[in-house]
Length: 445
Image (cartoon, rainbow, N blue to C red; front, side, top):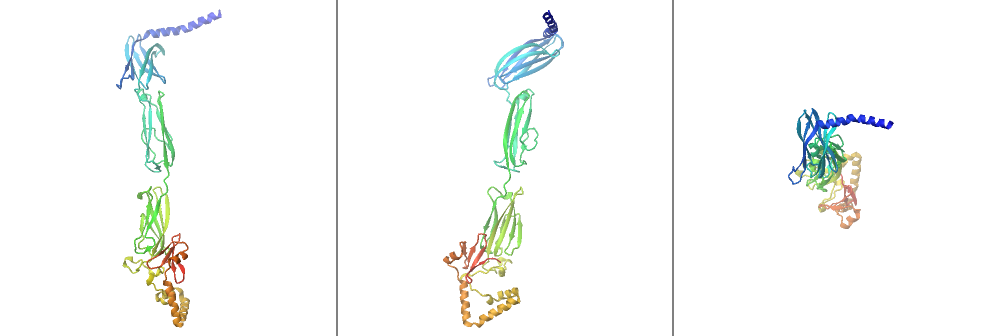
């Protein structure tokens, strides 16, 4: 009894719904439908389906025509909404462009939007199509040198297309990641010339409202600029004052003249400093004899610096009175050197100019000692004269090859045209051999 009562109540509740469905079906009808396969790119294969239909209604209605398209990968609904007056019939169509190669199965549903019920459903069949719309594509192209340093020209070109999303008004949003700071989501090139040094994995991701997606990435490596790379070249090292001489700052192969600026600090033999800037070479032809300490600092556009140094040795000129030397000659401040076969050693007490300078510089005490010394020599007669000649001859002797090898202590040597033997130390300093005393004399002013 109780079971029969429940069955009766259920039937009574469902009866209004059945009545609505019957009414809906009777008031809105699908009069005609057709599917045409079309070849839009004229390649001999269909790539678009045009569904054509006719709808009528016996009352004022808001009708929705839905075509559901199924492929192996996606199910996409397409809509066409229509408003009909009582007794009116309207034609419509829905075009479906193929988004991939394969079978497309179509179903058509007729909706009564006032009641939100389906009044009719029709299977439209299955069709084999080739692609008419390209799926979403993204592109990133890095433009720059093989090795990009901070501040170098650098940009990343972006490209984007979505025929499917554009055709069906279902475009999505492209997202960009991996950049050091925010960049607008647009297709304009990304300027990476101001990025800090580092390695960046720049990526684009995209998904449209139909579920189609794409992604791509590119690696951007920005290097710190290396410190300036250059060398110092000296032309005229150990040559005489007045002859050709230059000190050149030569950038390395990976540098250019415009990349670097140079500043110079020169310390002469008297320990006096001078400076030059914004030049890459110096003319040292008239530098006074002695050792000149040269320091040059190179600066690149990133304000990184490298400092190198070299000692430039210049020898006394053959003729100190040569007008081409200008006012740069101060013979009394130069070290003594032999004149080869023509050299005649002159003791201090026989050199009036040197004696006067010595007395003036050493004071009265030195003058007294000097006078006593001269007097003793003069009172010794011929024997003293003979001894003096021997000393002068000894001073004029130059070293033989064997003697040079013995006394040079393994250092490189050079005998100039006047017969004086020079020895150079690893730090660039030089001394000359005094045959009279049998010692090396440091070359300095």
